[in-house]
Image (cartoon, rainbow, N blue to C red):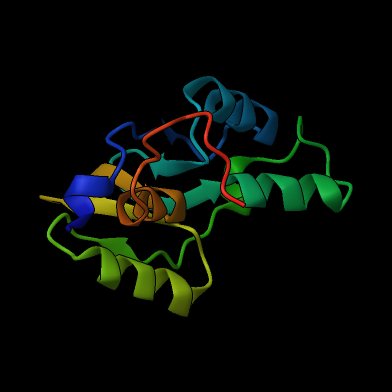
Length: 132
């Protein structure tokens, strides 16, 4: 199975001047765990729920701190044609849970550990069944 089969095509993009509170609100509204941070047309990186949590946990003010100050910029990008194994290997090696999927110079999706697991683990046939 390929990254294109597992990725979410809902790509939330924000600017580096967004506050962490604004970013968190947008991520919550879209039900995503990461946002691509763009400055104009060039990608700066990714802001994840973990970045927001770490900032707040460190006592930083989410109304004053900007996305740009907490963006991960040494991003590993995935291609839609990568296998899920390649994506999982990149995540494991880099210690992160999201990959921005790039195609033709722009973000076309995000693939997360949860997306990969969803593809690898068959859906339960009966929602009420509890494994034990």
